[in-house]
Image (cartoon, rainbow, N blue to C red; front, side, top):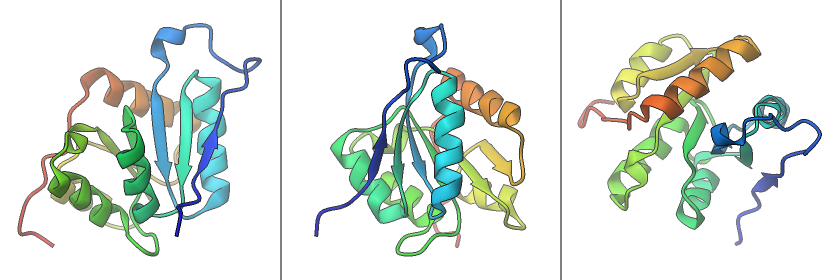
Length: 152
């Protein structure tokens, strides 16, 4: 069954003037409204955005064309955020080097980020400014996840 992931193209009217900051960002979240909101914020900042509704679709999108950055929800059906991150690491095709920002309202988000090995996470709710600061930080530092193996 082919994966139906939505690719969002930038609106030239909204595009930021500094295209040097443009990155290919993959949003993986089961909530379509959140994906749409995140996409709109990132497009205004000049980024190209692709969307997937669960971790399995996210892995398929990464396999087709690795993004510069992944925004990843934690709790999703089919394949959750930590399972997707583990899948990227286990494939060992370079996908494990893509920075991941965890976005979630769960209690213990910092602990989940530590298990995945990412320094980038934002607890919901967060402001658009906080999101853009985190995206800029992750793209600038480009620290890949370093998962703690054997911890669940």
